[in-house]
Image (tube, rainbow, N blue to C red; front, side, top):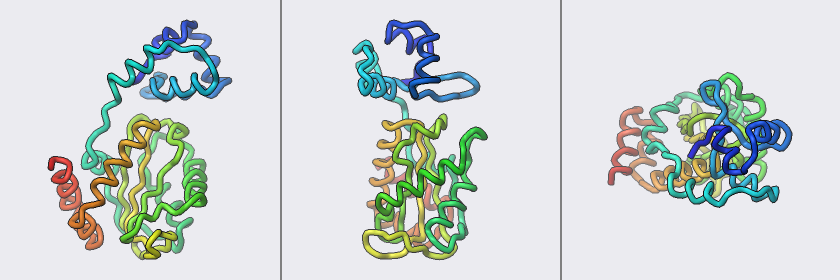
Length: 222
């Protein structure tokens, strides 16, 4: 559920200038879409509760009744793209090359994104086994992207990711989302799809884009 500044102000019973002040001075999460500011209802509620700022309970109730729509995984893959022959001698070089290929709004700081991904890996490998890794930003609010995205990278050479099964990684999914609820839902979609042995075989074989996307679509329809 996305809100305008005016709508957000109504839930706090303050004027729009106060919302603008909170955005500038108190880190109120905000997203810029087509030159307009939008606020996510769940993020707004979490921000207010964490700071003890009174906010109408209606905000949470309405956000839960009207959750943001998340496209199916196969559409996220189509829009994010399948990128082949990604090179990198080690994990850090690989992440740097991935970030440079991402389709991101011009205002997104790629160096900052890379630093976040590296910090996430330092907390624990995102290699999930079977040659697959899912690097993702733990705090997606920082990116201010308008829509979630999933990019699939097929590597030129396997790279040691410190995966749970000790196998080098040759397939990487990169997940970027505009807010925490979307972040968790996209990761859930991806985890469900990757349980499928046929999909994992297609990834290992570096199958054609159409076959990979079609298999994900079949899984979601089923």
